[in-house]
Amino acid sequence: MTSSEAARNFSQLSDLALSEPVVVTKNGRDRLVLLGIDEYHFLIDTIDEFSAKNADVAVPKLGRYRTVARNRRGAG
Image 1 (cartoon, rainbow, N blue to C red):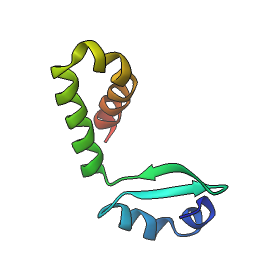
Image 2 (image 1 turned 180 degrees about the vertical axis):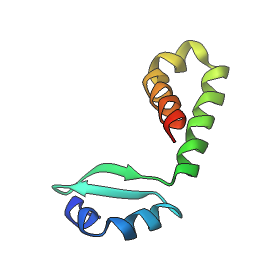
Image 3 (image 1 turned 135 degrees about the vertical axis):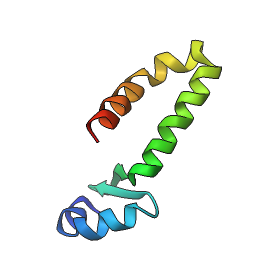
Image 4 (image 1 turned 180 degrees about the horizontal axis):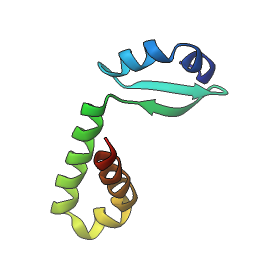
């Protein structure tokens, strides 16, 4: 879905994203992925699980996303 289509049809887009990830493009290139919150939390929890097992490699790479996820969870 293009960014223009996403802006015009956000309600439909958000409903669709509850059942599957939706890729939004801009100028023909993938730009964003919209996910339902349950899928997002599942992915963050999975990252946490894997990073605990491989902390020496994973934590530096994933630290930013884990911080953002924790902040968002507290706000939601």
